[in-house]
Length: 94
Image 1 (tube, rainbow, N blue to C red):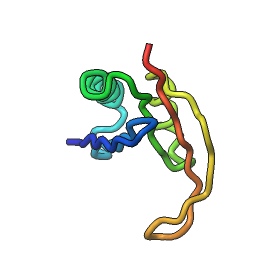
Image 2 (image 1 turned 90 degrees about the vertical axis):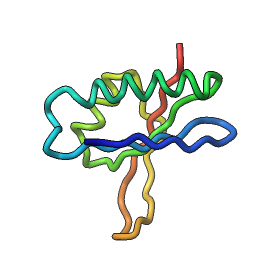
Image 3 (image 1 turned 120 degrees about the vertical axis):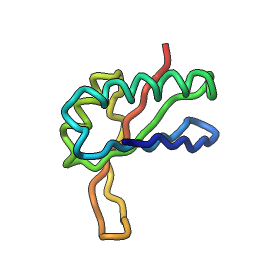
Image 4 (image 1 turned 45 degrees about the horizontal axis):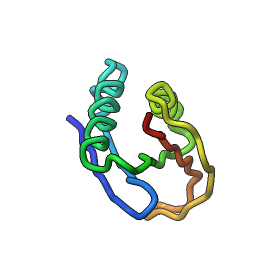
């Protein structure tokens, strides 16, 4: 169905997540984001949550913004399949 990955560093928890394309557009992204935020609160109560997304992925960016994430950086990064533009987003816990 999907996955969530957590990588902790000194400043924040970098999360990676994905959902099978077949399941997109059904509101499952919103549920996944709530699960992600709740799990981060349990595991890393004092840290910001950060994530990276390719800039062309507008639907996912909208989902992240709806969940309270804000864009904090835009940059070019090399990947295994070439260079691409990425957006870093952060969620500051309330």
